Length: 336
Image (cartoon, rainbow, N blue to C red; front, top):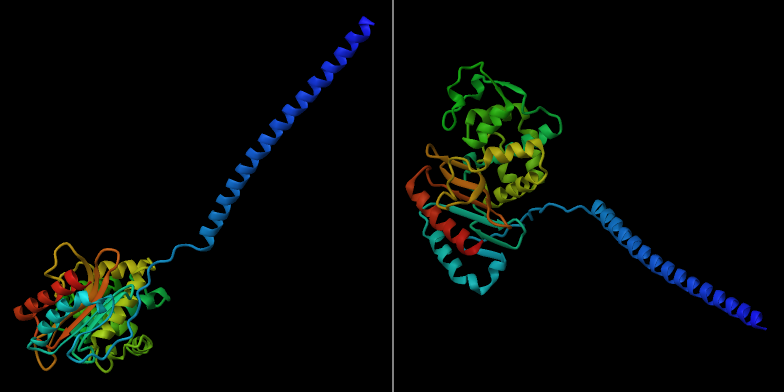
């Protein structure tokens, strides 16, 4: 009888021990499964995020090209500048522009399209060397397409001779320059010979067709190599194209940026301290085609702005320089 009781107790003990062990295993497996699910979920999320980043890479800022407004000699504004808080500053700027003793046209736009300002933008004024920016952009597009390169050799000939700005004119005919030198000097020191050599190589017809597709007919250069009736709005459109081209970050876009950024002959933003700018100025003080003008990009904070100022003032002169300083002070420090 005693043996039967002992046997019964042993059987019960085994059953209880087996049940407990089974429960422990069940809990352990349950915890492990939950842990594995969390890990797998995290891995899956990371993989999805990685795939999303590969599918939708970040895009560079694209300059918004303005439509243009016919303003007459009265300031017209768009976007944020329509707010009453800018009224007094705009009146001050308009008074300065109206009192200018030469014909003057002004166009300024933020690259994101958030604000714009125009004055006398339908005026056609000789832009002098400001057109070189448009032609150099066209030249870079041509080289991107395989038509020449920065290493292409150009021979200086009599037909390329032009007095005025630059130092290539002092070289003997027959001197060989690289395209990099010709275009670089055309932009950085406004070298007329370098510009004429590039126009001789890339031509006028293709450029005129291209500039027309941008809606910038005032920047056509035929029958001369100069834009005789430039509009400030057209210069702004071209510099929107240049800004967007900079964002492509190619060999040629970097070359263009370096050739026109923080260069000498800075008319419009000369009075500003510590500001980066990319631009092309132009001036002429002889004959019937007078000009003291400038156009380009001011790299201000997260939202650069594009400007174009055209005048038929004889350049270079202290009056225009002082007036430009007043204008750009209001534009840069109060409006943009």
